[in-house]
Length: 409
Image 1 (cartoon, rainbow, N blue to C red):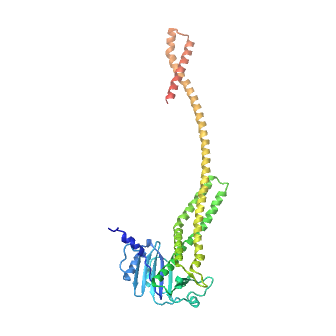
Image 2 (image 1 turned 45 degrees about the horizontal axis):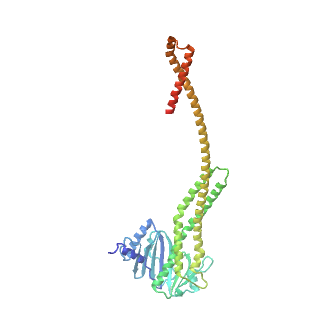
Image 3 (image 1 turned 30 degrees about the vertical axis):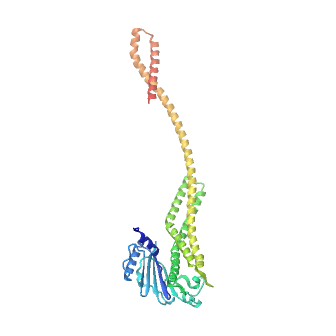
């Protein structure tokens, strides 16, 4: 008996098939950020699939591939964005306006990649490249690489044109449609994940400015010897709160940028590009332009972690000093309490002595009232001796009774 997940798991290897490409053709590729976890993107994709005759999508489907007489359509839903790929058959002029599919005009999500790849069999001349991408200048460099031993090639300037499209020229000289499709997919994924990773750059720059301000505050708080340790500790706690706020607001974007960068690096290795005389390779261009931007993001993350550790270490030292001072104050307070207790004990004993005298006095008066007539009648002792003996006896009895009561309490 097969496991209930066997077919689903086995199908994972085929869930994102490559779109075959045959020259001449125009490949339209768009990437849009998902809204509401991609539910609206999937609903729109299902609507497009029905219009193309694919029918309803599977409940767990994150992609579909449809072929019509004049085009091939593909939709894929990724983590935070969705992509649309449309392969239009026929010859198209790279200088002419890009014929964007009408069906995608209502697609949900903010578009951050719009690439148009013109596929032909011929290698472009310098005149063709100048017509396609404009005059080469310091701000408009051309990039190109040969693929598969010269069987294919890519030329572009990675610039967004006035019409909002990034144009690329793809040479399919001696590549079958599936091999060309795989190369095309790597090329488009480099563009998509490069752009997705760069969304962390403005956040990193803003974080760098905030980190600079917090770093100065922390340094000033530590260097200010006029403040007490408790006041300095309060300043460090405020700085730690700000650091945590920045870390929380940047964690997802920095993590995503790091993951996207690894994908770009992997796709570039898989590209196995070869140099075209007089042009930069795609990997060389990205190493000079894309890598520094990603290093800025990594630097911001590293500075944030270092500053957080520094604040925590300093706060820990200050907390130790505050604890030591509090312990010393507690010892002084305990010593003072001991002195107070001793004074209270001495006072209590003095009060107890007075109590013995007072109680003995009243007891002596009562005893004298009873024993004096008896002593007079019997003439046992003289009156003065009688009073002395009665006083001593009364004081001794009262003292013993009070002592016994104090011991019991």
